[in-house]
Image (cartoon, rainbow, N blue to C red):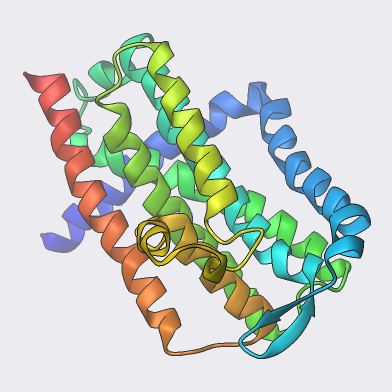
Length: 261
């Protein structure tokens, strides 16, 4: 009985993912555009900033600035994909298309809907990160075979960001509120040790940065890319798992409140 229920739930979640796939088959150019942004960043840094900044000390190991930044860009590509789907797209489907109102009139539950949307965000963020990982490897910026684990880490980043995004979007009233989302995403992108070590911050700022999911994703991707695996990486994994679990449950509760009350 339990096995049958699990199969049914997987099929329900898959149906939500398939709905998104069908939609993006018509607007595939949107997906392609997401692959190009990291490439532009890589070119700009590799041919510009890197020559001026020189090497960076990471745990006693000197590496080129581009090699330092690339893992952060991989993590950020996962952030951008998951954030777009779980905020702007989610808001449009919730308030304008009324897709979720229609979904819950079928055998789909609210849990199925949330997991399906998160699963799609994870799939999209993993595609972007994997493409960037292949590109970075081809250019010689991934220095360890541990770098292959960046793919599941990207999925974990996508899951955490998507859960936070859906939860936050349930509080959004109008499109104007997304100005704050754009600012938050830019602050995460710039300030999560993507472009410079966290040690450049004052102590109180470090504590704030370490509460953000992207910081933990960047730290994990950098450790894997450079092969500098340490016990601290378990803390980063735990932080991402806690974020996706807590905000995922909150997102489900908030969506239930909006759709059923």
